[in-house]
Image (cartoon, rainbow, N blue to C red; front, side):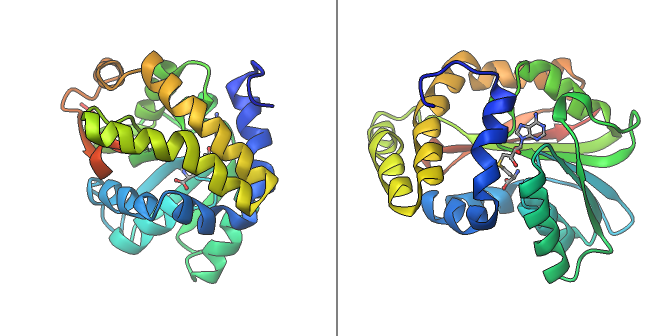
Length: 240
Ligand SMILES: C[S@@+](CC[C@H](N)C(=O)[O-])C[C@H]1O[C@@H](n2cnc3c(N)ncnc32)[C@H](O)[C@@H]1O
């Protein structure tokens, strides 16, 4: 699978389908707990209240949706292209007693089935590497937020500091595929895909360009914070 050129969207379908049930546990473990920290930081950047509805795109098993509803008491519509990830997400939402506030739907980030300005805020986690045209996906996310609403996205990044970069390279290049392989074949594949796709995506689509695309999409005050020595980044702002 690794090394084969394929449509990023199809790669995501194949990659996540077998992982749904174990996704949350091992995403936490393999990110050395940083995933939860980045999510908390993102949720704090979203300015909404109990009357508002947030759209979480590429919601997966609902981690961001659950964190938003718990933190802000808001409603959340999560959307993802993977049926197994959504099924696990619905199970988690039910177990959390939040089925009245969180709805998870099938769909693709490239063609969000929502009206212009329908939501008070939009969020996404780890989406852009899986779409063909990240700038168009960003424009699609911004489109569904009302003027004055929050946008916030999180993703992996590549540390700039040479010492942090060396530690990051050792972990992402060697540790991650190795540890993934100890869990299952599916997680080994995730480790391999991320080992290659984090640096290649970041080289192709560096932070400066991402921020420029958020600005062009209508978020003039967009800003970013590198987290965990630059291994993650949260981008946020307000739709003009
Ligand atoms: C790494 S998971 C992240 C899930 C969740 N955002 C989180 O933070 O835990 C990436 C998710 O993106 C979804 N995905 C990838 N490309 C997508 C697309 N084009 N449209 C909708 N969902 C997509 C996958 O199905 C998967 O559930």
